[in-house]
Structures are given as structure tokens and as C-alpha cells.
Image 1 (cartoon, rainbow, N blue to C red):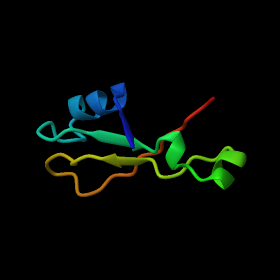
Image 2 (spheres, one colour):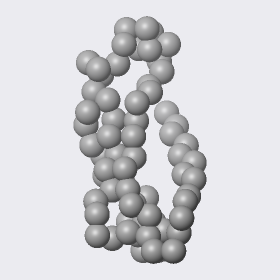
Image 3 (cartoon, rainbow, N blue to C red):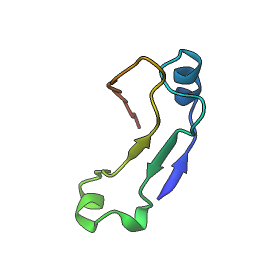
Image 4 (spheres, rainbow, N blue to C red):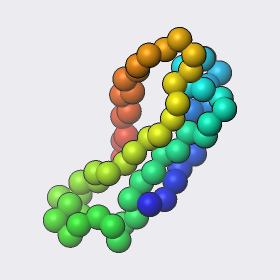
Length: 68
């Protein structure tokens, strides 16, 4: 897995959605970890985001759009 950094976590922290005391980790599989079938289909699965939500928020949904 490789990890990425993005402006999204900073904004979510500044807006009080994510806690600022734990890191936000975005993990993406390395190309060698993607199956040959998924590579042939140009499909990437297994991206995970780990974060802690802030204070009074009990749950949230993230919609992420990735474009080529």
C-alpha cells in the first residue's frame, strides 16, 4: 500500500468534521498488488481512508470522485 496526502483531510479538520488529534490515512494498493484481471479491466479497488470523526458527529458519508 502507498499512502497519499490531500487537501481534503485539512479542510475536513478545519470544518470540524474530522478530529485533529489523529492522522488521516489514505491507502492505495500498489500496482503490483492489483490482480491481472482488475488491471485488464482498468479497475482499482482496495482504496481505504482511515480517520476519526470529531466531537459530536456520530457518523458521516464521504463521496469521492476520481477522474482521469
